Amino acid sequence: MGDYRILFLGDVVGRPGRQAVQRHLPRLQREHEPLFTVVNGENAAAGVGITPDIAEELFKLGIDAITLGNHAFHKREIFEYLKGPRPLVRPSNLPPGAPGKGCVVIERDGIRLAVANLCGRVFLDGYDDPFRDVDRIYDEIDTPHFFVDFHAEATSEKIAMGWHLAGRATAVVGTHTHVTTADEAVLPGGTAYITDVGMCGPMPSVLGMEKDVILRRFRTSLPTKFEVADHPGVISGVVIGVERDTGRAVSIERIRA
Image (cartoon, rainbow, N blue to C red; front, side, top):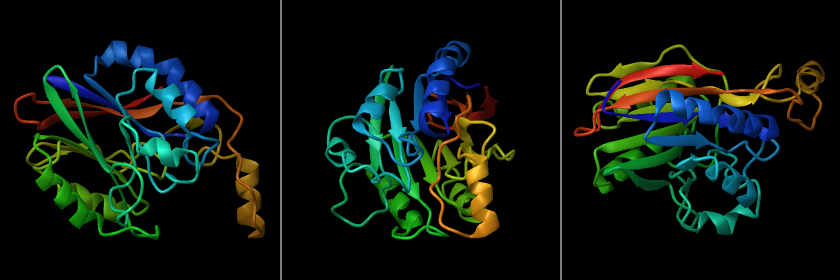
């Protein structure tokens, strides 16, 4: 499993997702003994965005960094918080002037892990080229331990990013679609990859949302306010084994609880 491990949990959806993380994370950390725990929190506030209070709630659970995505700025109160010292990472490939950080470096036990967040452009608007931007980040960081959360819709774009960073990134994990894929692999050069980690959110549901609401939207095509499903949450994530000296991944394992 490598010299150290990274535990990553997929998109946390609303209160049920947060409660599931609170309930299961201590056991997962005992079982897998990760050096770093990273969570995508961009749906943590009622399914859309994150607030400072919710970010603090997650950090207090022992989470080392929180990544975001296309809903990063949906709660206005997060703007100033993003400028602060907490390792809350919004998409890097945004126009200049966007508040917050697109990459942070967290350190523990002598390991410096760079954590970057980028959004895809297929079916998502308003983002600069993520491939060019991740190259810039790679050239700027001074550690071989490089974790990338690629928040994207299209599987093809995610897979392309995996190959783009093969042998350079420690891990490229896909988020956003909330459905776990079964294609986890260690790519040539030691890059752990999965197209989508899945969500930490309520089941049964449609991607964490109340299923009857979504069915009504599909059946009528009328505007509908999405609501987080009021059911217990499940946990979806991966555990990645990494070589301490090289930053290369040697294993990736899906987890679900």
